Image 1 (cartoon, rainbow, N blue to C red):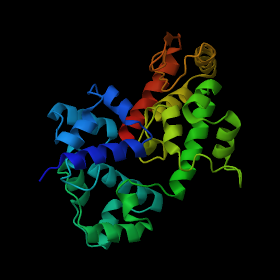
Image 2: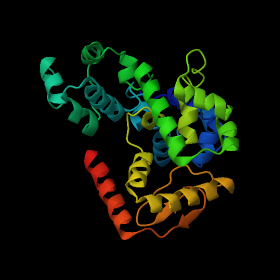
Image 3: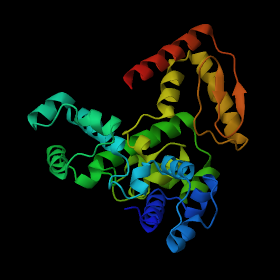
Length: 290
């Protein structure tokens, strides 16, 4: 049985976990500012299309918002299992066979939104030495934080950082950010429980920051490094011009000569045919990895 109170509570909880205010969520989803209050007091349910918008915005399923299932995103759990296999250096098929789990386990999660029984989740958690909450995407571990540090450092080195934007989005200065990236003992824990701030800084999700999903910046980094040195200088100069003009670059892309700043200005630079070819090849390699 559906309960609008459950839906309202889950929307608020997911928004809080992502560091998003309810008012911003409702505004971004083009919903009435009193929608949550109405759900709690009058048993009101948003229209189906509105629930889909909210689910997409919060990266969860509509079924989770309605209280039908207790895992926000079953596909996320499947992806986490894939990543854990890769980190452990084992093949997914071998792991499933060792634990006598059905070969279609991941397929059912990704395509049928089928949740594994708790005993399966417990077995997987024991095998990977993580918690069930970790498998459900509700928390991050030490390895995730270390990967987030590395990714944040690489992204800042390649894309650059506008100090004012950094302060505005995270409340920290550049020194604090670099100290965290470099994991300086005793001083580098500031962002460990604020990964969503770093993710927002670079315009990616937390899952992408910790390496559990591929993000557009992977495309940017690989294509950038495939450019000829002269073309790299051209692209870098354009990036610096944007930064100086307070056009913060969140997801720049290099293809056949275009440097795009999402949500900001777009500039075009002429690059050699060879560089464009290399960039295209790099994009294909990334596409084939997915």
